[in-house]
Image (cartoon, rainbow, N blue to C red):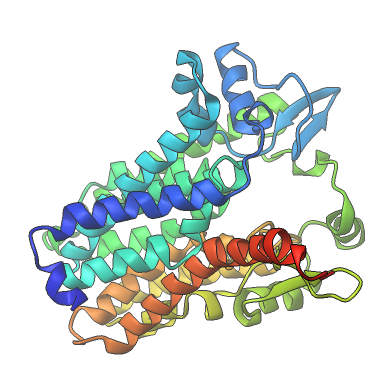
Length: 414
């Protein structure tokens, strides 16, 4: 029935309205931090003053030579700068920009899937998979948080880079990859896939020098952003490779981890592997009798149980170089994450670091699904992921409210 409706002329406007409502609904139930302590807002204000340091300490700020610096890469703050300069409610500005970026990403992904040879019905399913069946829905809902806004921005830029690579504009793909890198450093590894995609692009089937020029354009576009980041680090911390993470005031278990093992260590692999591939949908209870619903596990749900459709990427059939570049980019990102001291918490029903490579995964899924009709199992996995995300974002808070505010009047739990 959904597939038939997908072919209707009303599908796109209705689906677009549902898409916006779904994202805004997630935002409406998410906790809203004070915009005045949003590190990107403070960084944007600093840019407007011609400074790089922020006026006071906020969470995840680096303390260096008595000054406070935002450790996160600067592109999200640069995007917010014009809005901060105009003035107005800061939380509304972040939400407006996040929804705009989500719409741009949706449009770009639709075009990518169509270029890969997917029919409109399949394009609709794949868009639902990424935007509502992964941590992207969670990230847009929590967009007022620094970490999540960074992922929304980085995902848009990376999707744009893939779109431009398939479209034959290497230099623009390089710039967009650079902007993704200036939002989330792990986007760097996606460059492996972009190079392979350019080399395999049928648009450049002529002399080899055309491919070389496109790859050079990709490298040049990325190099502009990379050099800016090196300069940004040097001005703040007196070294081009110093990102400020060593000057964080960590607390709790993260402080213990870094003091014992440093920021990167093989000792983190079992914990990170478990949460990346094995952790299920987990509710936490509290109280003396452990019967009062506290909420969901703050460390997330593995990609295996939250978004199982990603494993359909193994069905992809394409030129060996194209597939090798994709899996190398994904593998390098995963290895980096497995050695890292933090798995991305705070997060519900997602492993949000997977957004660093999920756009590439979606390309592989599209390649595997475009000729494998009717894709019943893929659609079932996507539907499951969307419904589970909806349960995590709306069902669990509703159940918590029902227990704490309604049933508590008749029965004592906790």
